[in-house]
Length: 421
Image (tube, rainbow, N blue to C red):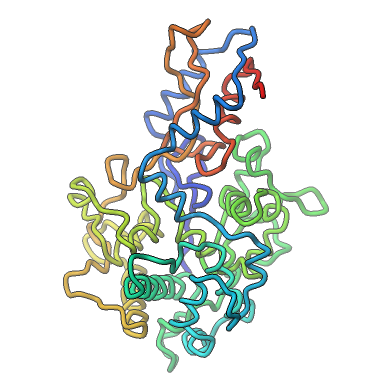
C-alpha cells in the first residue's frame, strides 16, 4: 500500500485542513516571517477589551467570500444520530445515500469488493456517505447529480485499490476489484508502540492541539495507517475526530475505531471532501468547482483523474518524466472502475501525473484556511497592535472551519485581551 502524510506536521508548514494528505513541505517564507515577528512584538500588559460579538463579526467578514462558502458547504456534516439510523434500503435515508444505493447496491458492493476485510461493510459505506451530504450530493439536474456520483464512486474505488488492495496479479479477480483488503497498515497491530507519533510531544503545538492518547504504561498510542485511506499521524486523527464528534480526543484516545467501525470508510469521505491548501479537494476537482487557473495549467495541473493522484500522493508519484508505477496502477484501476460505473473516459483526459508539478500558492486551490496572528501595525490602537488574526495557508492550531477558532487565535496571540459578552 502507499503510505504518506496527510496534514503537514512541521511547525508552521503548508498543509490541509480539519480535515486533511501531503508530505510535509519546508516552512514557507511567510511562516518564517511570522516567527520572527512573534519575537519582535509583545502586547502591552494593560487589558485590551474586545466584545465576542465584534470577534464573531470579524470572523464572519474574513470568511465571507465565494470559495470559502463553497468549501464550507462541501465539508458540512450530518449529526451522528442521523448517521447511525442509516440502513440499506431505508426509505428515510438521506438523499445522497439513496442516490448511492441506486447506483451501487449491496450486491454490487459485494461484487466490487470480493476480497474486502469484514470490517468494511455496505452499511458502513452508506454511513460514510451520509456523514458528508455533499458527497454524491444534489446538483442542477438529476442526470448531473448521478454523473458526478458515478465518477466519485469510480475515483474512490480506484484509489482504494491502490491504498488497501491485494495487488495480486495472478488472481482471477481483476486488481481494480481487489480493494479494501487491509484495515491497518501492513505490519502494525494495536499493541505496537512508537508508530507515527513523533508529533505527540506535549511541548510542541501539534502535541498540544492534538494531544495523543496513551497506553496504560504511559507511552503514546500509535497513529499508523488505518482505514480505506490509511489515516496516519495525530495531526490527522485529531481533525478527523473533530469532524466526526466535535472533539479531537475521541479518536486520539481510541484510534482503533478508524479501523474497526464505519469510520474506516468515513476517513475516506472526510479526505475526499476536505481541501489540502494549496490543493483543492477531490470533490471540487470532480464536480468542477475547482477551475485550474493559468498558473495551474502551466504546471500541468488540469482537471482529470491524474490530478486526484497528485492530491493524494503527488510528492512521491507525480512529476517525473515517466509515470510512476503506483500512479500507473491507479490509472489501470480507474479504467476498470470507470467502465463498471459507465463513466466516460475521454481520450484527452489526463489520467496520470507524470510531469505534473506540485500545487503551490499561486494556484486556484490555494485557499487560506488557518488563523494566525495579524502582525499589522494599527496606529489607532493604544499600542499599535492589531488585536486580530488573519487567514494563512500554512497549518496552525486554529481553523477557519471551526467556529470560534478566530476568537481562540486572538486570545492566544494577545494574552492581554479580555473578551466581553
